[in-house]
Length: 361
Ligand code: NAD
Ligand code: TYD
Image (cartoon, rainbow, N blue to C red; front, side, top):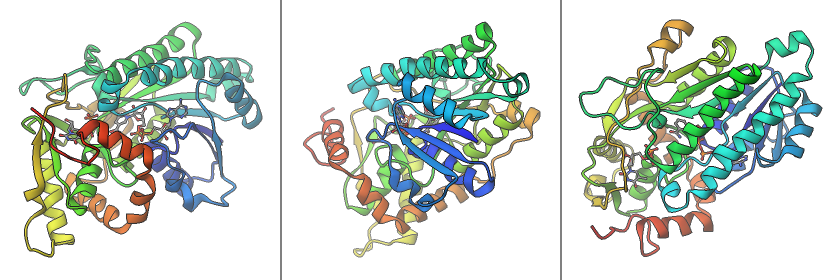
């Protein structure tokens, strides 16, 4: 079996669902269930003996030690993290706790377990660390896309904490020989994405008749990948990635934020037209920019493609259509994750306690 951390979050949840649908191998899913963790995502696994859920912190040595000894996984896939840049600006402490200290404690627990395995099990074992392209910093419009040899230049508390965790993973390989691989992926989108990130926030706000808050001039560029393609890349790297290596994962799909928002509006106009005949795009509202906002991310995924033969299955056009349709088909999931904690965050970020309200420039 494998042990997954953060498997009640957006990408981890999609990964666990896909893994159990595609392989007979069981999963121990360790998640602290912060505001971002939603067991609602995993309800289709109720009663499935191949899914063992444990609510715990990756930094809790006693629990992680016990789980490793009890379940004897052949691999650990580490998704658990604080992941929202805007939250890291308001309160960086949790990011240091989980992404830096939590990863350190998890690495120590795994090292202890791994060092006690038999020689063949030791050799076969893998620790896969899921990271982000944001560790490389920001590109100008003419820079080439990030490759695995780009310098780390993180700019936000979130990306700095992820960069720190990547360095720890690298050092545990170099110093202790722990068999690690790291993936650095671009922005994901798809089902079960918490509606405080750009794409789900725009869908949910649009349907609720609320403003669609675009930061600054809306011309910041992100490189978008459908979440299930990220999951297939992780499965491939787990299977065949070279030890100690890092692999960039991306969909060759750079787009400015405003174009993403307009695309979401156009799809909603088609799939759920407004009664008054106006476009959802009339709800777009430019708001104060994020402090230190990175201008452009772009991933060069040629290493993963050439070495491991991975390719994304979705284009942006097919992936975004599936995503918008998923949110239209799953209003209950959205309603259930919009808890008190969610509403509190929206009030803090967008002001006045109303989702998407315009902020003072
Ligand atoms: P998410 O915020 O949706 O989910 C994170 C999950 O981790 C949640 O279920 C949360 O409860 C859990 N968690 C948080 N702290 C924990 C702790 N101390 N112990 C145990 N569980 C804890 O994040 P996501 O978007 O699914 O991202 C997953 C991973 O992928 C992260 O490491 C993130 O840095 C990375 N990543 C995300 C993206 C993206 O676009 N979302 C892109 C590249 C990389
Ligand atoms: P986000 O989904 O938070 O991902 P990240 O910051 O990790 O790239 O944001 C994606 C882009 O969308 C980013 O450039 C910030 C921008 N954005 C808005 O313009 N408005 C919003 O309300 C949000 C949440 C993000």
